[in-house]
Length: 123
Image (cartoon, rainbow, N blue to C red; front, side):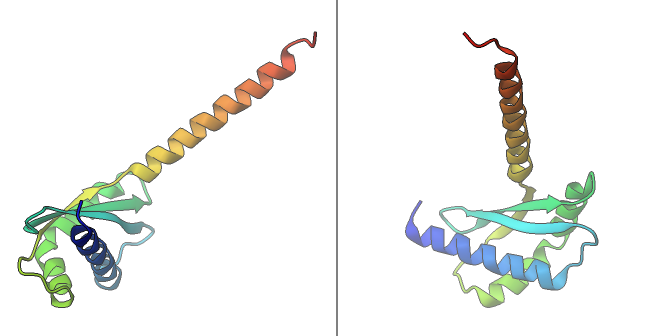
């Protein structure tokens, strides 16, 4: 990816995050913008959203953000001047949850190895 596209993605990430923080209220839910991937022509951007909260809240948050996409694009594009305003699409990014599950599995495997090594007789 080009440096320009990386800078645009990072700028969009910061501005979208600020817009969501100021304009939306999600009770008992933490909503974060993990990444933004913009197409090379800057006409479309996928926004990866992390949701930490109640069960099934992620779908509700994503549908709310996609419904208010025009508002978010308008606010962000007043601060980010580009020739083309990318059409934002919000999707759930569950990489944090997957990472936690992997770490838990590795920890369990480590505990099992310790238990097995304690039970084995010393020669």
